[in-house]
Image (cartoon, rainbow, N blue to C red; front, side):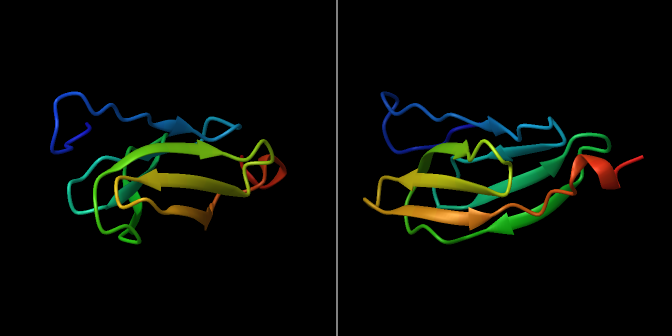
Amino acid sequence: VCVCRSPNQTCKLAWSPSGSMLVVPGRATGEIVVLERETWKITHRLKEHRECVNIVSFHPSGSHFVSASLDGEVRFERAHEQPSSARS
């Protein structure tokens, strides 16, 4: 999943606290992909970073996640997860 310039770079993906979303970093272009677990469809593509994203982590509430990149930036993104009471 991680495609950074150096084989020594590691990437960490993140499950949302409810387990309904998977955030996958690591595109050399700085892209982050958000997948919906039940269908594995891509729900969002974020291109906020200029270089490889090597880590993402969710806030315990599931409302936001953070990403860090080789460009030296840390970004906070709003997660588009339905509250557990809204899911069937």
